Length: 183
View 1 (cartoon, rainbow, N blue to C red):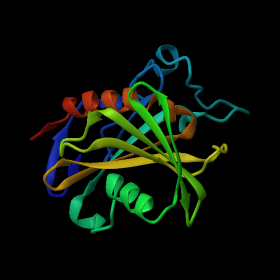
View 2 (cartoon, one colour):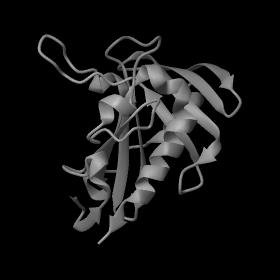
View 3 (cartoon, rainbow, N blue to C red):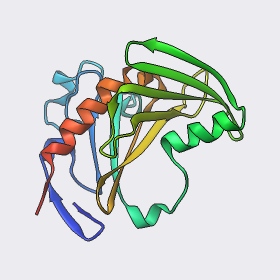
């Protein structure tokens, strides 16, 4: 795949095409492996009269040029701004190493932010996940992004039902990213 003028290769079973890769959760199975349906009990492939549940169980990782994203505040700075503005409704420890902040959001009414208090991004800031609706609805999604290479941002998207697994999903994403090699 080519991102921001740079070429990367990686295992085809993750679907290293079109500037994205994916794996299924919670099995961590590469989404494009030939035997994905056998290795990932959570995945249901499309069949006659039955749709796939890909969007419900896939952790999708997208690669974007840093320049294309612009200077919008992200992650921790957005949470800090919400706190200063008095929009933080609650902070809850979900479990050791994971907090959930409920924040009044101008678009989604109440949004949930999941903060991994023990894992850090390459820039030293906590790994943070934004979920667009709280309580979750069937079409709600969680997203995050972080700088992976100097000119490349990784963006992730997955179903809200996996939000409580954020630290483990982040670690698996880092492992998958380590499989990609610049050529």
